[in-house]
Length: 309
Image (cartoon, rainbow, N blue to C red):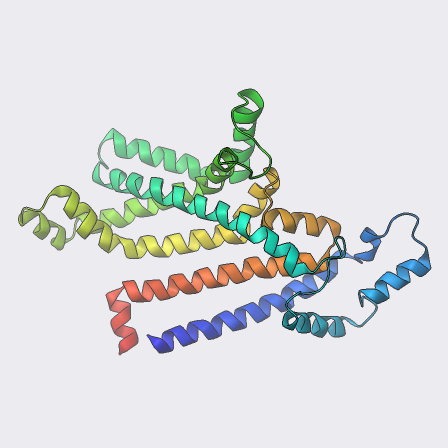
């Protein structure tokens, strides 16, 4: 198990280094950032002075090595727009994004697992059919369409919920539902399929033959064995939310998180902020995948015994 964890750590480091390199060179393809920072009255001498100040006149490889060295000072350079350390700007956005992600994951687990179990148990009744219809509809509707529809209905027409920011608990409702909609639909389907595979196993019939209550059989024996598959799906879906799902939702609701910061910095060509913001998201995805891999190896007895051998 220790060697497996070490291999996972090495893969994390190599993956992060590759992403760092790709992000640096990809941001340079969008044009000269100074052309978007300076005002219309800026003279050519002032423009050259800014280019020299931000070291944009140096060769690309020199800028790349300077970018790598910026990881050692803890500030990761200065923002072109705000003239503040990039780390300070990004750190202000991490907690709001984390709050939104945790609320979306919490709502997903609270709704999808009971629905998936119900769809598996009553698969031949209207309850199972209704759950699957809702799951397919939720899976087919993109989160930005759901977010826009909710804004029109609950904010514009009914004036029940606020749209912009994260000041109160009411601000969380629409972004959380919009962000978790597709994840709820996907996890409901996977939970149903995993439970269907488990319900027909011999150990389930043995548990019932022992006289155990049905809810104990379903939860303790059924869900526990189906949880390995559910765990892997949750990891993939949460990583997807952290990577790209929150960007659109945060932009729609003006949520002061990493996603909104990425959109703004990309439009402004604020290279340092954009680079560090993307790397922060990438690191979160890498860590989430690594944790899920380790949890999967620990939860699956077959894989655990293989690693020991």
